[in-house]
Image (tube, rainbow, N blue to C red; front, side):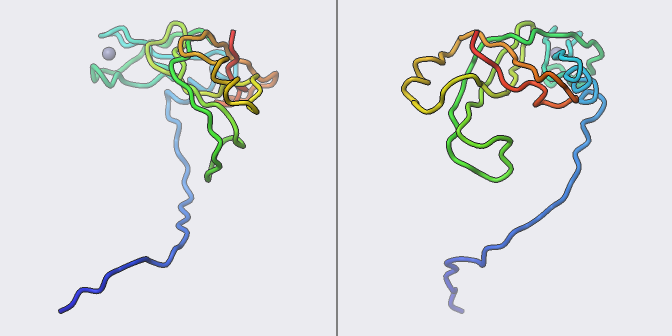
Length: 155
Ligand SMILES: [Zn+2]
């Protein structure tokens, strides 16, 4: 029996409506955001502060009960300029997404870097350096979501 080569399949769209529960830890984290506070949890075994706060330490496999507020300022660990549009993007390109180590946290936090003219990439590269200090720019009216912080700005 001869095998037929499959060169393509008919393209289609799969839609899967869903709701994702933020859980107990997510609720506490987003309540903090609503009050312009970034909340993390501190592991009683290793002492790591994880942000956003979570129910257990993935390193020690122990439940975490202690909540701590961390700074809304931190250090830029990595960044990238997104110029390509794709489905379900939270913002219109171009924008900068960054990994930030907030002061008082041991894990990284992901958010936008803003307040920068993105029209000239060479200029952007000169402005933004790994290790730069950044701080959150909060919306005036917060509702308890990640975008209560508009973006992080270079200090
Ligand atoms: Zn731990």
